[in-house]
Length: 242
Image (cartoon, rainbow, N blue to C red):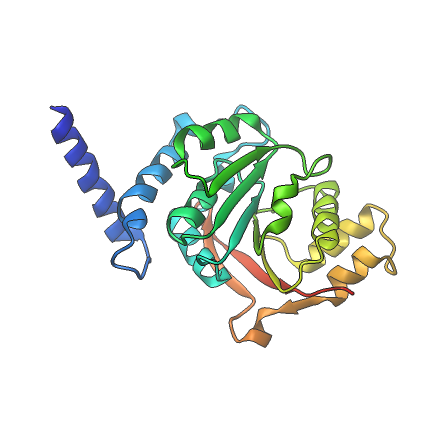
């Protein structure tokens, strides 16, 4: 098969996959028709799993259609700065940049292999950037400008959840949105297990300064597909603790 025919065949496959599975409501969204489906297939292929690293199992990946659904419900748009904490292969970051057309999309992950895959495979634009690091030890200053955070944190141990809670607290989270695979009660429990007293500012922030989305008539939970099964992602709006 010639290169041209192979390219046309690949394009047709991408478009058929998108038409069959993706909920993108925009008929002009080239990203969801062509770019993202192809990227998602590469990222979820067994050869791209990088599962030999203890922090990179593909079972924790979110599907493309679920990512688009979650980003739309989270309210990511061209005024947003999006951050994925524990971004893995960077697929959701790429969806934020390509589908949601946000101002900036950033991801951070502990596994350098996963970040390397994201840099080598995701569309590289000025608005898309990735950071390798442990949020328990280092938090890139660039992430503080985010307006929308996503964290597929179902496997995060208490120490990591506690570090994340600290960082978002000190960022003050003034009317920012946070989508989490764990509930606020899980995060509060992690804070307590790490020795956080109930009267501490960080604990009080997370327990007393969270606005759930029903107050905004949007809904607290949305079902997305993670690791082949339907899971709940919860969206919260943080307000200033001052």
